[in-house]
Length: 373
Ligand SMILES: N[C@@H](CCC(=O)N[C@@H](CS)C(=O)NCC(=O)O)C(=O)O
Image 1 (cartoon, rainbow, N blue to C red):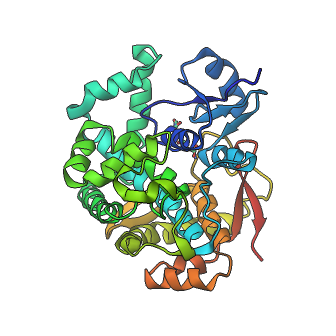
Image 2 (cartoon, rainbow, N blue to C red; image 1 turned 45 degrees about the horizontal axis):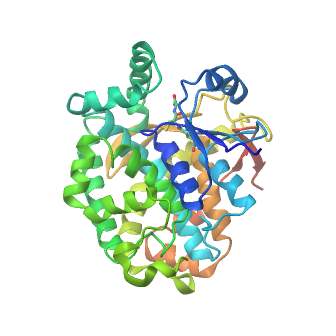
């Protein structure tokens, strides 16, 4: 008997949402199990080397951590709706959303979850309490709350974060009025990545959910669609019979304003973090083949003085960011149509900046890859 994969995760976990949505869309059976499960704490965590979700445990006991590796594992085995558009512009844009969801929207997700704790405490306590005792629940909530400064959530940046959330909702609302997913009639890695923050936190916690439902009903409907076990295209006429990405590698015009917003919000943070990476590599601290940090739970290699929508903050520098950035560049290759599209939306520095080293994934952690020439 083949056992269904176990998905260690939780309903309110940002990254679990990304994987759950993918598994449902592909019709892959799985059993979601909370990280309080004794097998997870006793066997999985020691092997992965850190307490992190999601983790997928396959029928033969193989463990896969990281949403990218989990999705790619199932993609390699063959899925009914691939998350990776085969053509360069759509594929690169999908990876741009993947990067923006992590570097950009984790901040929004964490701000709306923890800065409004008083208004949504009962909801969060219930969510974080799954399978755990009250002490463990309180400790986990305190740890999550403590990440705000490193993500750049402060009294100074909060107004910019809230403006950004409303602007993004406006841009996506206009897009989903015409298209069920970012790039046509089936979700890409861009949709799955956005779904993490836009569902698990912003489309579920009471304060940001109310904003989304009032300001952007079609974005709210997209969160339902992303969670459905089928393509859920009821509002889009005959699209039901036609899964697939938009024809001719087209990028829907409605994504234009969203791409402009992404450029304005991502580039300062990325270029300032790149300087920290360059200094790290120049110091000899990044050795090819070695883990990016001394311990798997340490995510950052330093701090960058940077800004978000013109507001200064000091933010953590995670090698994982460069891993995602590199995926975008690998997808773009030397495609001229991608270069033109990125130039039209002030995104060219993403293709042109020199990354001094590759970041790869091995043994469920990030390791340094090849140095650039
Ligand atoms: N890069 C990882 C990120 C996973 C992640 O950050 N998961 C969060 C929950 S949504 C977590 O387990 N955090 C534990 C902690 O940081 O203490 C992935 O894509 O799987």
